Length: 318
Image 1 (cartoon, rainbow, N blue to C red):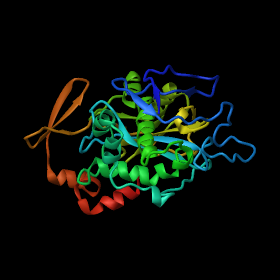
Image 2 (cartoon, rainbow, N blue to C red; image 1 turned 135 degrees about the horizontal axis):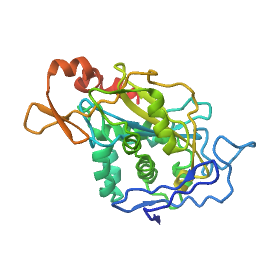
Image 3 (cartoon, rainbow, N blue to C red; image 1 turned 135 degrees about the vertical axis):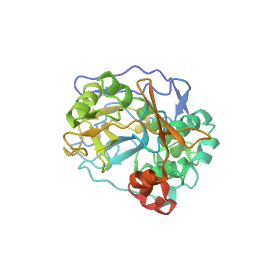
Image 4 (cartoon, rainbow, N blue to C red; image 1 turned 90 degrees about the horizontal axis):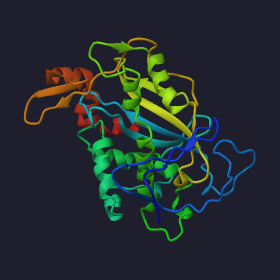
């Protein structure tokens, strides 16, 4: 195992915006050593066939970090977007899923405990939340690895020397968290005076411009059926193995947008107050109380959050 310091400086190469992760400021993280040579082509940029897929991410050469803004019920910190997943999309924007059934897992938490990653688990418990609250966070983590993590070529078990069962699973979660930490969406929006509000709406271009100015490339934003901002996607190519973290930021593969041009709502998270039937919205230090009303929750979110019978359907969309 190769111990990696947490405070990597950002590494930009011209206009490519390549970078290393400045991850998990409060605890150490270790990856497996990829042993890939230097000078490899970027994913999706090769002109000839690359045979060593342990050092060239293919066919999922577009690495997409997706973040949630879950506002009702409010999940995760009230001043941060949470993790959805790290996905290997194909170069044309399509994707594969559940690629190697024999590598699928049934308990993500158990795998991370096996490798002694208690601090990483503690971070995930706060920042990688399942919108289907009846299913639990572990179910989302399992789903994300089984659906997407099994499709990465460079963290296939065959790529490891002295492989330990589950090693690639732990690396997948570490890489996802490390990439997420590089993308402080809430802070970037706040710097542009875009903050959660129950009264103010925004335009898609305002949100996209604020994020693109920090990310260095365009981003994809998504809204729910009520025009509430609920997800952000950041796109990358990668040089060599994922474990080397040589990501290059790119524009979205698709030029589409998931929000209307105007009237985008950035709704404050509705955080339940323990031991009461009230919730708290906190925005810019202003606290507003709103009663938890079952009818309102059903009208707005029960199909996702309040009905356990749709858990499988919800996860199929992730």
